[in-house]
Image (cartoon, rainbow, N blue to C red):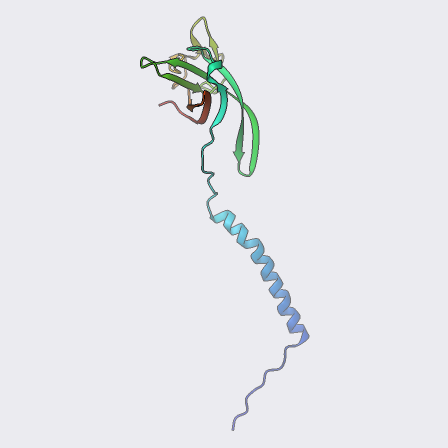
Length: 169
């Protein structure tokens, strides 16, 4: 007949050692799981539209570029900043009697300088390197490599709404 070995009851020392290792494991998991999620998972993309109400369409003179100021929120990681921004807006009536609105970024496409409208020349002029652009944003003169960048624009209930900036095609 064989005797079965009986295990000795755990000592106080072995209980506390196991308890400390368990706490270390819980702390490690509490730190490692969010860190792994941050490093391995892509950031969440904010869906939806970011249209900004910038002006009343009735306040803009037809066929004359007007600089409008507005507040926008810029998201940089977790930081959200409210900042003042501007755009050059031009409205006119096309050959089909449809009201058209274009909005341009206020930076020259050459080196990003702020340009201005010169009524005498009927052109946007960049003071940095003398680039000139038409009221439609096309390059007329200077070193600018492409037309002015445009905002997506829509008109709702008489209000001009600007969307994201897109390079002029």
